[in-house]
Image (cartoon, rainbow, N blue to C red; front, side, top):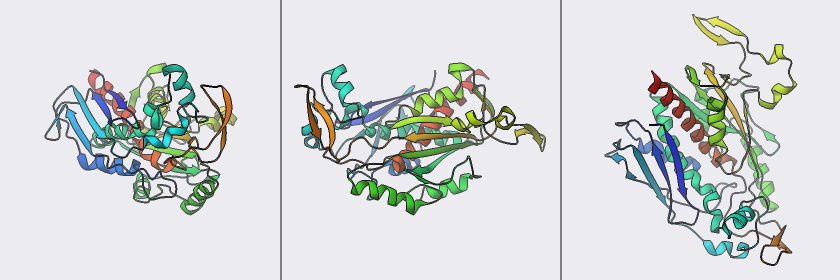
Length: 353
C-alpha cells in the first residue's frame, strides 16, 4: 500500500483531522513528539501570532491501539474549540483580497467562515502526520529541520551562505522565533507591519540530513516533485526552490555543477548547488530547500473589494484574529511536509527491495 496523507475539516467546523494510509503495522506513535510539533505550530503570545488559542489535543479514532499502528488507515482528529464565526459577518459576500473567498464563492456559492478548508488551521493535522513521519525517519538516521531564513527585508542565516548544522536548527526551535540570526530585527519588522494594521511575509529553509543515495526517480516521480507537491498544499506558500534555486540561473555551468570527490571511501560533492538531488533522485548530500511565504491576506488595514451580490465596489477591513506574520508558525509545517514526502519515498524504496 502506498503511503498517503489526507487532511480534512475546516477552520470553524467541529474538527480538523488527518487520514494516513500505508504506515507500517507495529510502528510506535510518539505522542510527545506530536504534542511538541503542534506546540511549535500553535498560536502564542508573540507579536506575529493570532490570539486564537487552541488546545490541539489529538485523538486517534482509527488504526492505533495503545500507541501502536494496528490498521491500514490511521485517523486522527483535533477538535476546534475556539471559533468565532461572528467575526466574519462582514465578509459573507465581500471577499478578502488575495484570499480564497472569491474563488470559493464562484465555485461553491459561498464564502466559508474562517476560510473553511483553505484555512491554515488544517496545517495542525498535517503536523500530526509530519511528526509521525519525522520520528520514523529519525529511527533510520534521517533528520529533518527547518528555520526562518528571513522576515520581510531582514535576512537571517541561509544554507546558501552558511554551514548550518542540525544542532543549531534544533536549538532555535526552543526559541519563540525559530531563526539562526537577527531575531530581534525580524521581530521589529513584524511589529512595524502590525502597527500599520498590515502583515509581512518571509522565507523558510529546510534541510534533511542523512539521506541515502537513490530515493526518488525521474520526472514527476522525482523527490523535488513530491516535496513541492506537499509544500504547495500549505496555505501561504508562493515559491519553492531547491539548492541554489533561482540563483543558479545566473551561474555558468562550471560554477553551478557540483564536482564529485571521494572522501573516506565515499562519493560526495564539493558544493551542493543541486540541493542533494540529481535527476529527481537523492545523491547523499543534505537535501536543501527554501520556501517563500506570502504576507497574511487577512489584515485590518482598509482594502478595496466588491460586494459579490450587488457587484458594487466597497471597502473592507478584516476583523477577527489573524497572524500578522505566518512565517514563524509555518516552520513546523514546512518541516512536516518535507518529512512526509521523504518518508513516502523511503517506504517506496523499501517496498521494492
